Every structure is written in C-alpha cells, then in structure tokens.
Length: 166
Image 1 (cartoon, rainbow, N blue to C red):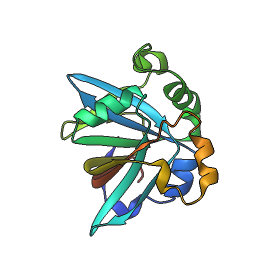
Image 2 (image 1 turned 45 degrees about the vertical axis):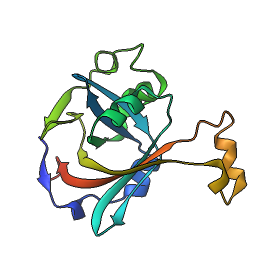
Image 3 (image 1 turned 180 degrees about the horizontal axis):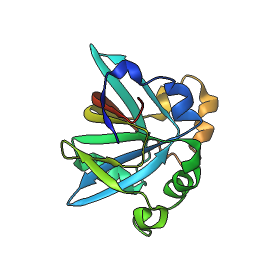
Image 4 (image 1 turned 90 degrees about the vertical axis):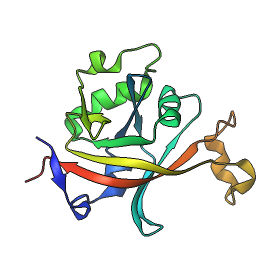
C-alpha cells in the first residue's frame, strides 16, 4: 500500500527514469490516460522540489496534460516492463491501456496515479514550454526530431511522494 513519505526517500531518479521508465498520468474531461516516459528529471528549482517531464504534441496524454493542472509520475519494478512497453507503444485513443495491462487508477487529492506503482510523485504544473530547434546548441540532438515534433517541457512542483517502501 502506498503511503506519503519525505521526498528524500525518492532516490536514483536518473536510473529510475532513464532505465526503468515511468508512467505519466493525467485526467481531463472525466477520463484518465497514461504514457510511458524515459526522459525526465527530478531536482530543485525556484526553491521547490520539481519533476520535469517531456511529452510530444501528438501523444494522447499531451491533451490530458494540457487540460489538467496536475499529473503523476509512477515508478515500478522490472516486473512491470511489459505493461510499460505497451503503454509507450499503444495510444489511449485506440487502446484501453488499463484493460490491456491490468493496471488500475488510484487517486491522491484528485490526481490520478497507477495503483501498482512502488513510488509516485504527485505533481502540480508550474511551467510549460516547447523545445525549439533554434535553441539546440548541440545540433546532433536534432536527430531525435526527424519530423520536428519537439517535446513540450513541463516543470512541475512535487507536492507529495507516495511509496510502498518500509
């Protein structure tokens, strides 16, 4: 069962995001959608604990995130790799990801998160902007954008950390 913990209990963000992946979950218009992400950051900005996530505009979760003030970042063990792969490969427009994976939605202060997660960051959006081609100093990174579908960057205050760790 997840319970609130101090943010200092959330460790290894680089590995957990980049190698283990996470699910970004948001709600809008009475629906919930989630997507897999392996790019992001956790740190300190504007004297607040923040999480930074990136979503391409064609992703269905982008629509939910744009309409919501809050989102969650859910983290799992390696045993959930198949479910996370499906949530990254399939669109919620065409597939009921929750039915297909057996994942369940839970709520913390009206913010949806994935109940099977080991750790969850409940976040409030503070800032959003799009990556822009002319701002890339290392031009080789543009190969990540062959169709120029630059991510939107969301800087979010971490309001709560939930964990099943003892």
